[in-house]
Length: 340
Ligand code: PHE
Image (tube, rainbow, N blue to C red; front, side):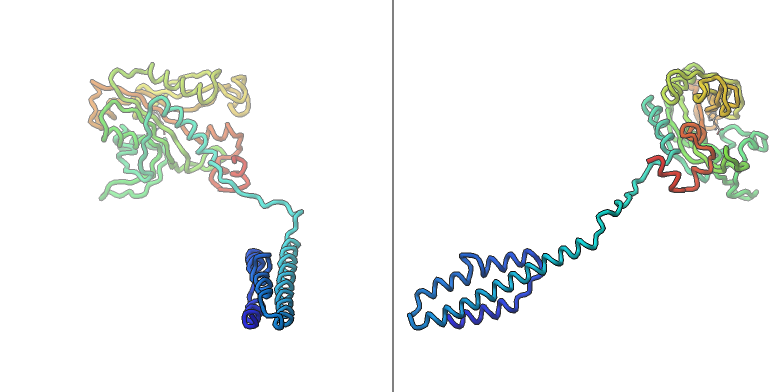
């Protein structure tokens, strides 16, 4: 008995306890009613009478050693916890969690895409660094034709030995790629970034986004084009919107038109944004030129098609009442956070 008591007392003095869990284990091992010390008290009853007083004294010492250790550690763990609590200033405001937000230009683009995808258009994408012939020649821009100047081009490579390479000035070359790879019927939208070497101002920037569309099938007419644009405009700008088609020119469409909607800020009455005309131009469109179809090995005697193209930033500027297009490209969180 004596031996067991001194072994336990050494064990108790040496054990290290640093968590509440360990303290609880300590209590269960030594101090509860069925614990080691209580068991020894039970055994003591069976000892010869002469040995009982010493054993009792030693056991009592062991018990108080365990109890003191338990109480001291319990206290210090408690204090530690309250010390830590004191380090936290509960009156401080919470830390702001930053949520990501969709960029306003992407928001408008996704809305537009959803409308056309619901009409049955597929999405096609192509490179931003594009061959000159895909960007111009195959789209029926004759060499040195002034129409190339309509789109101030950034040239990546321009020499007489090799093929010219440009930053695409519109997403129409994606439509060339699709027509070269697929047989009609073709129904695609081509969203993406385009580049033009324009004077930078609050209204125009050297990079912007476009969404162009193309539908080629047998018997496609200008009426189909109008119906598609009407349906899109009503979903995008509201069911009261009115449209006007104005004759225009693009080398790759014939006939061509530009489409205006009633200004959705003043409802057509005239305001600063629509320059008091009541109309806002939203897109260019037309029937695909037979030369373009021929360039892509599609027989214009069998198939016809329409195409349209629009800028995204213009709508984003108006929708979100942003005064300067450059704010879309500065990645200033104070601006972008407003769209969370
Ligand atoms: N590609 C033309 C542009 O960028 C837009 C357009 C597309 C016009 C299709 C007509 C038909 O200006």
